[in-house]
Image 1 (cartoon, one colour):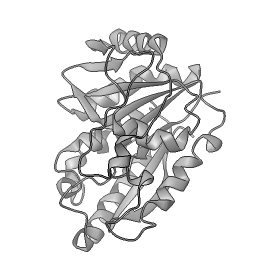
Image 2 (cartoon, one colour; image 1 turned 90 degrees about the vertical axis):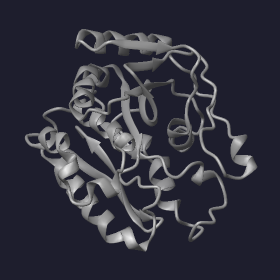
Image 3 (cartoon, rainbow, N blue to C red; image 1 turned 90 degrees about the horizontal axis):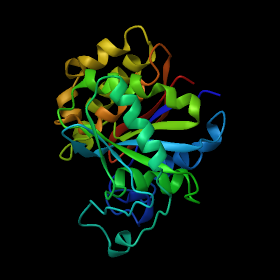
Image 4 (cartoon, rainbow, N blue to C red; image 1 turned 180 degrees about the vertical axis):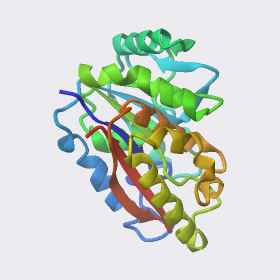
Length: 264
């Protein structure tokens, strides 16, 4: 069974695990409910999950190889209890080695980090996706240049994992402008979101569209810097030639946000 690939919204900091005060209390309820149902919607449960998060960049693609990764609380200004969250999913040195093998065969220099833990782009959404933390998780960095073609190509290199029971997940946000969460940006976010939904759908034109994503409506207002969009490039590349679709859509903090599924 070939698993699809996904790009998921990881929310704002630990938003799913606190009393939300920036707007309605139910702001993140729809996103949380979708994440909770993610595994049930797959053709089969994955044997492992490979996550590319918008919160880890390195000079070359770098994979976390710790057998028991700790948590990195890389957010600030949130309630004290959100710094006591736990997520005990095991890592997988074997999967980390396989990721390096595949990327190396495609000509990418790689590295591994045997000490780095899961950042909040990993553990916050996966606490909902896998509440029992019983599926091994490996994190792969972005490459610091954020080049779309390099990340699409990395996804293509990693595609064999889909037939090996590994779910490839890009974790970011379809809109990520820290100064752009207000009603003034609602229409702009919907315009960019609509463009992105069309761009990812057709595999014949998707790569070209994503290579030139800054030409989309309000692109640089959506992503002043594209580290939260780049994980989507990897997920899309790993499903080359296969359709993409909007798997979830909502409006939170006055802006549109979506999740995407490829190869379903």
